[in-house]
Length: 79
Image 1 (spheres, rainbow, N blue to C red):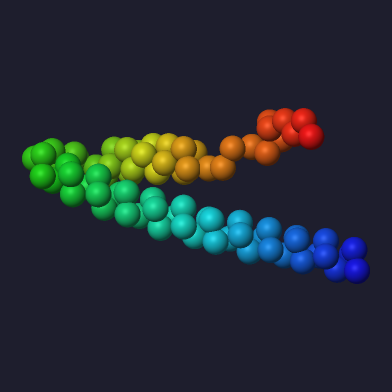
Image 2 (tube, rainbow, N blue to C red):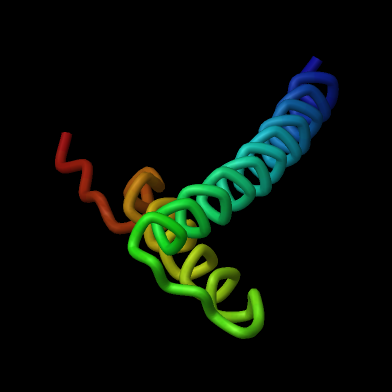
């Protein structure tokens, strides 16, 4: 049974990674929309969309990094 439980843990980890990747992509698309709308409201019209994508990537990356769970390897369990 140990091998089957390990395989189940591996499959659930892969599924969780795929779901997190999908949410990260959706978050990026929403952030691009918000940054583009904000630039439009501010009257800023960049020549290319490169700066909008760069700003959205920085914001989305920071949000994903801030929302990530702390590393479990760094926590100490003194029980």
